[in-house]
Length: 79
Image 1 (cartoon, rainbow, N blue to C red):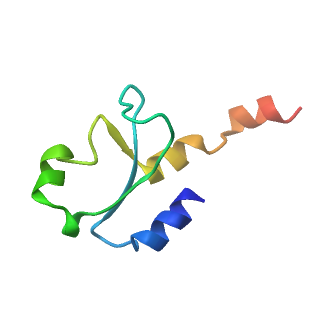
Image 2 (cartoon, rainbow, N blue to C red):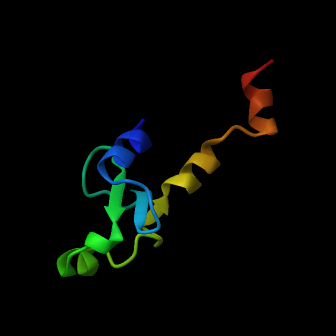
């Protein structure tokens, strides 16, 4: 659902990034998805967030892939 809302606000394209903060980096007390069009970044945002593929941020697609069930986890869920 977060991705669908993000895509309404920032249409997907080659300059669009959807990412989450990685654990250990928490400036607010809730889960939120960053939806960024890199063509519209200001100088201030470039200094504050120099790259969104850093140890502090993980791309949305990587999170979705990591959360997909594997054959091993299916054995745990299904008897």
